[in-house]
Length: 446
Length: 110
Image 1 (cartoon, chains in turn blue, green):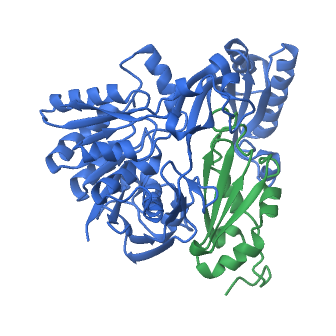
Image 2: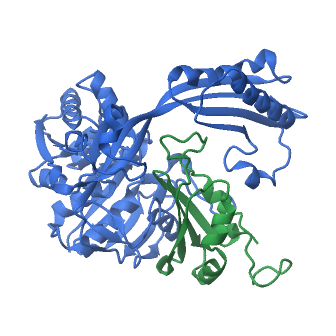
């Protein structure tokens, strides 16, 4: 039976680069996938593209490509990535330029476009899923609207001979499903196969999170070699059978426990994990360790895809200002609390206009509030944090200033003030009828 | 004993919704999770954090539970004022839950 080996070379934009090089060199893989696009990254990338029409793609594109392209070209490993962000065509041109500068030729690069559905959504009455109102009501605060595309354009590009497929917003598991569809020709209505392929994609999409990254808890869950963590490989066969493994000798571990944690990561109803190509069902998935660092995953199923695509809408929401200062030694917590009280009173006195605020002591109650923190003893040092949401940048700046003036006006021996103020690009979602997104492919030759 | 002694956990985020998995180290302990790690207890634990509902999904196939908590992330990762805007640290708080193994405090599970 035919099978392929897919490596996962990045779980987010800023991920380590050496594990991907290791996969390309030693992983015996045919496909290398880089998942680099977070929920709000497209909106920020759209802002970058507005400033520079040739920009708006992943900031680490060049570094990552320079590291892996020579190896992948030599070994015939195909690349699939969403590093195109807001500008896949410009990203494809950039990759072609990098390839030429490395002396590589006859590489076929495919850019998938059509995830940008701003025009189709902007003035519509599509309801927002997370906030009240419709798209139209967001008005000129909207920066971007990008649909999560499915597997079809990526698989089509691979079928047409692409060596590199670069997309903008596409579903993360679909980046991995595309090589399977290309290699095995699975029918796009074989829901159980698509469901099992989605299990594979979902397990691989966060790279190191299934090889022991984000897992270690000394004494309870020990993991060795996290500084040289190996990234995962999915061995997928034509019938959908799947083994998760990693490069022999790399750090980390693939175990049933690492696979179970990743299976449920960012999943809500495990019977209905909604993807553009299928509604995957994880409720029958079986996970078995068959050898060291080899875990068999079976039983992924699926049901018919929905008629809509999820669209991430980026919009300007508000501004956030923040200030921090530290106290140490005897009475550190009491001085920290006094500092918070002073800033709270100052913000009222000087009339800083906020719609929401947090006053907290890092090291005491900044993560889960006072109730859960009540069991804590007295620490040696504590960091004061005041933050608030405002309607404009000027008000946001005033919050950090009120913390900074604690230097000469607050409790004894405070040190290390930092302050910041920024605009908030938020993300909400709408569901778009799928025929309103029209993806297509543009080829660039290197 | 603590939940941490019998299960492991990871938090994920989507918008303003947080999900926390609770996975038994040993599949035989899944019934203990089912009976003691209820959505009511999780909701009570996170009373100061979660403003919305807590729904529990059961996965006997991998001896795990999945808690989906609505309005848990201060308006969503992108606009939250929280230091841990993703709520990624919530799984550690959940593992502090006290579990009664039926053998009493002084007699650990066999």
